[in-house]
Image (tube, rainbow, N blue to C red; front, side, top):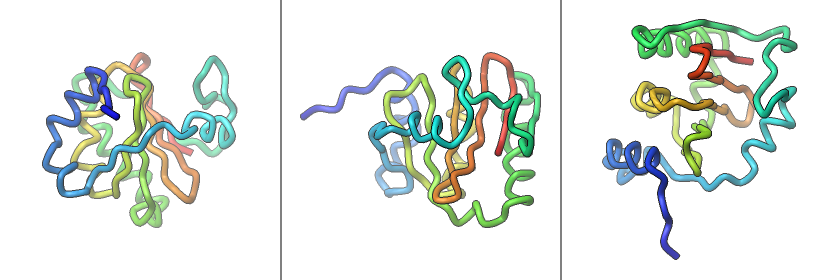
Length: 144
C-alpha cells in the first residue's frame, strides 16, 4: 500500500530525510492523538482551552522571533520539568496527516521548521502526558 503525503509532509520529510533514514524521526499514523489530547485537556472550538488551565506556561511571539522564542520556551519548560528530556515525543500539526515520533535532541533540530507551517502544532511528551502547543494564527505558545 502506497503512503500518500500531503504537501507539508513532503516538504518536512524531504528536508529531514537523513534524520528519517537514521531512525531519529519515525512517521506515526494518527492513532487517536487528537482524541488523546481531548482526554488530557479541556477542548473548546476543536483546540485546547488554555484559558481554564491554571498551571499553564504561556508565551506570545512574533513571526520575526519565532525560532528563537520557540527554543527559549522549550528551554524554560525543560528547566522546570527536566525529566521531559528523557520522554518519547510526538510532534503533530493539523497541516499534517501523520505524527512524528522522536527524542528531545531531534525535536530541537526540527521544531523551527515544523512551526513555520500555519497550523496548530502539538508537542506531546509521553508518558507524562504533557503538551506544548503553538497556535500559529495567534503567535501564542502554551505548555501544561
